[in-house]
Image 1 (cartoon, rainbow, N blue to C red):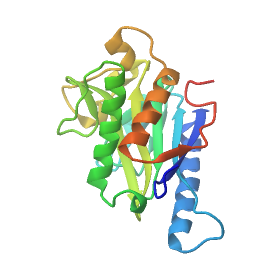
Image 2 (image 1 turned 120 degrees about the vertical axis):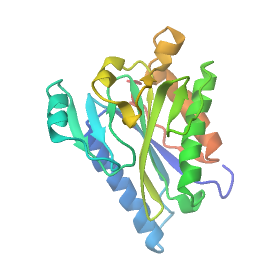
Image 3 (image 1 turned 135 degrees about the vertical axis):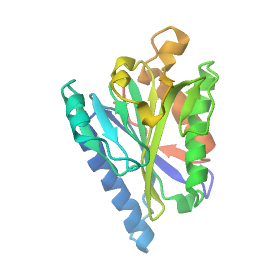
Image 4 (image 1 turned 45 degrees about the vertical axis):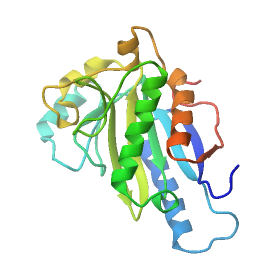
Length: 233
């Protein structure tokens, strides 16, 4: 391991409820904030990259309140609905989607949210490239294949500690997105690795590519990679 490179612990959560993943994120956020507040005994805690899948859930962001009656309609579909403190608008998470929550103290990387979001986008573009898929960014946050979004990004950052993150569609059931305007972008569609390649691509298959791309883009050392990640059981 090279000296000075940030250490990021990979935490594989498997299929986990949105609320439980949020609770775990806040635990790791608290750990980073305590470490940043002053000297602590022993080595500094590593940053974290939480990987998971969620049961069907719609989440809303801070940018625009979503009408309560429409949220109730989404619940009738059999999905949970949660309001969040992340950026962005409404999106869907569900099985077959690789959800990644980086909990990083940006002081160890670069104190720039614009840079951070850009690196998340480039990480996902690199993953798509490893599958032979040409993806790109647009004026809308996230990663796109043509006019179809393959990965949504929505983050929160407080005192330079990040939470929330991005969701890459692997073999997600895309019909769930048909009940909303994903991320509030009218006239666009959604896609997945499986849809683009016309074969089944699971989160388990995507994880190694994601970890390599993340380590390269963020110039960090990944550690603690355990079994049981999204789709890896």
